[in-house]
Length: 77
Image 1 (cartoon, one colour):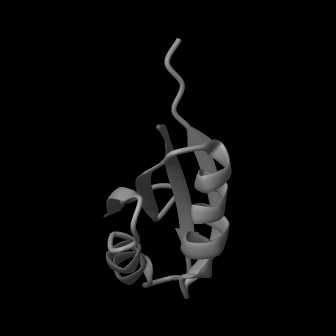
Image 2 (image 1 turned 60 degrees about the vertical axis):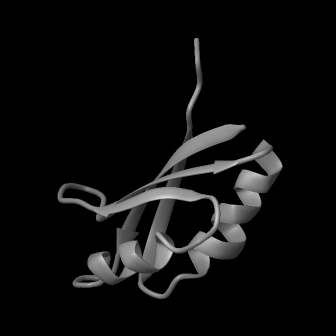
């Protein structure tokens, strides 16, 4: 299982709506609207890195109101 944090920037005033929509996507563990340089932080999981990539590109990035994403895979050292 691969997990990642997805840091999301949204259009002004869209963070809450984006977080709500993303929280319903299969593979998303949690989606929170936050303050700071990013507007939404998502924790997601998938079976493989490739599946995680498809989740981000095909599902998350297609949500209206998102302007930029940064995916940070979780590593266990």
